[in-house]
Amino acid sequence: MNVSNEQELIDAARVAREKAHAPYSKFRVGAALRTKSGKIIQGCNIENATLGLTLCAERVAIFKAISEGEREFDAIAVVCDTEILTPPCGSCRQIIWEFCGDIPVTLANLKGKVERETAGSLLPRPFDRSFL
Ligand code: THU
Image 1 (tube, rainbow, N blue to C red):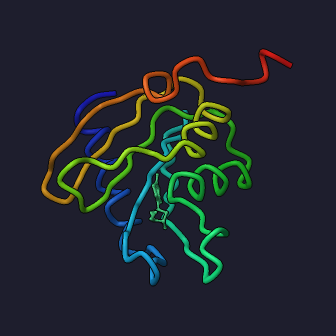
Image 2: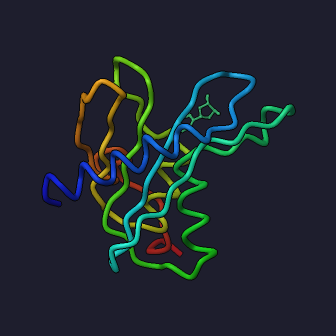
């Protein structure tokens, strides 16, 4: 992914984060997923009073994309307001792997700090359909 493509994805995740519904944790997360056709699909975390029904930004973006008929993805960016960049949780790692394969995962904060991972580096030895 070239630098301007990556920055565009980070910017989209930052905008998505502003829509976060996080009244309980106040921890706002934005994600942006790029389809192979070049579309960007955004997601934010959506909390619920039961807490356990909370959805992470990454999964919201991926499920939005799947429900819109998208099946092929190039990259995902995740933005949080933390000094140590926030990585996807374990559930999101599994879902990223399932629907996106070994794509680049860019982590960023509001101060412009950026780190690069991949779905595979975040989820070594994944379980997937190849075992079924
Ligand atoms: N959260 C995400 O949206 N993505 C992650 O990968 C980590 C956690 C959200 C869920 C919850 O709304 C808040 O952050 C605190 O856990």
